[in-house]
Amino acid sequence: MEYRIPEIRKAAELLKSKLDSLEDKRTILRAPELQALYDRIKPLPPGKARADFGKEVNTLRDELEAQVASSKFQTAKLAPIDVTAPFDVNIKPADRPNPLPAKYGSQHPLTAELELILDIFYGMGFSAVESREIDDDYHMFTSLNFPPDHPARDEYDTFVTDEGLIAPAHTSIMQNRVLKTHKKDLEAGKGIRFVIPGRVFRNEDLDARHEHTFYQLEGVYADEGINAGHLVATITAWLSNYFSKEVKIKIQPFYFPFTEPSFEFAASCPFCEEKGCSVCSYTGWIELGGCGMIHPNVFKEAGIDSRKYSGFAWGFGIERLVMLKYNIEDIRHFESANLKFLRQFS
Ligand code: DAH
Image (tube, rainbow, N blue to C red; front, side, top):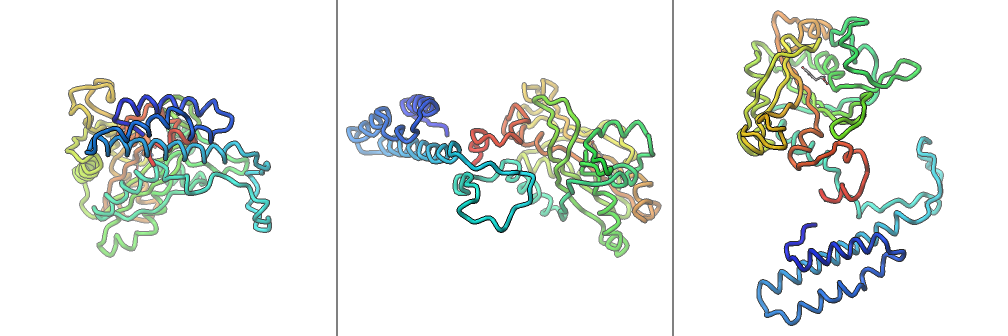
């Protein structure tokens, strides 16, 4: 919470740092610094300044109360639980673990932003289908035109079970499924327009820009007479809508086995309009993802005639976009479950 009145801002900082070191957190609500703020309200002349002052003091008190309440739950001794065990329906309510109650929770920023992004695509005539969190070699590679032992597989180094099941490294695993399932629509002249959000996993060296677990949004569009112009127009329209301003996109040649031609796409930096700033590393452009025209072999694998139909697909990282929008400096905050980070979006 940002306090606009300097006196309250200062007291808030002080009280919050005191709270961290207090054994009994409730005593913060009786702190002399908080009482002093309340005492300052009465002598102020009636009017807007007084009302604003009173409002901010009350907000500060509410914020402290919420922190006291949540710390009570976080420090309470909980019985150890086996998080890998299936939830036991027979456990007596009194014996169940007592985690932080839902009323102190809020929507995760990625969920909130994803809902917004999906709404934009619904408005453009797309439907959504969720990706999966466990898959097989066929959907991860073979159906996407990765020949066995092809070096392009190395780009998607992820986790594999002893049985050969794969934690998907991209949401493109859904392309074959979506194309196969909706082949009928294509043949009925309706076209295929899907966005596919999902969680993906990679064996990464972690840093501020790389996580082992992150989210992507895949897009698949197929119909008669579709070309790369439609691809550029679709991505430009949705990004401009998301950032509420006209965003330009730039595509440059790249390689993916499942698209031909393949591109990487970058958007003009929404913060500096290509002048260069710290967000875009002074290049004026921000790389957002990969895209291209769906490869004939991917259509063939789904039983679709690529001489009659064409289409485009893309995949971009959702954290990247949300980090851009809110100026978040480290991708690892998203999976950290750190309430101090999450509460800034509540
Ligand atoms: N799956 C790719 C990745 O994660 C991104 C991508 C590129 C998806 C091109 C696509 C595409 O659908 O056409 O690196």
